[in-house]
Amino acid sequence: MARTFKIDDLDLAQQMQVDQCIRIYRYMHLDRILHMIQELKIEGVSRSALHRYLLKLKAKDQLHAQPDEGTIITIVERGTGEVRIVKSTASGLAIASLIEKMKAPPVIS
Image 1 (cartoon, rainbow, N blue to C red):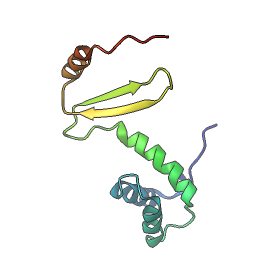
Image 2: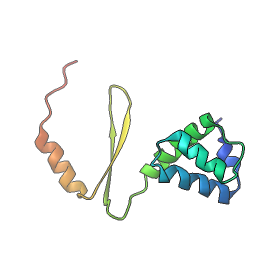
Image 3: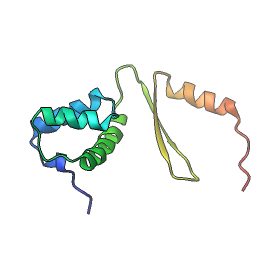
Image 4: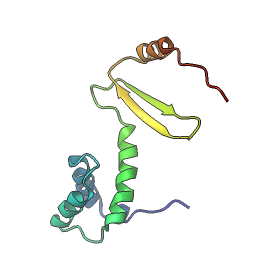
């Protein structure tokens, strides 16, 4: 069963305020975000709960393109399983062409 977040239990208006605080600080400065949340009189959000929620929100937000981002590229590192999301104004065709031109060295196992 997936873990629930304390912030998910807040009413929608408070959740939106928390999301806005996190985005204002660009998913960094956890203590400043927590202080801002406390100033809004939103109670019951611990630092660790905020950190877990922040990571979830950041991952969700990375999937949404901004108006100037026409292409979203998902990179999966086969060796480690690390996933990286890259957004670009370049077309998918242009990005694929650049990758093909790189001619990465062969992987030796």
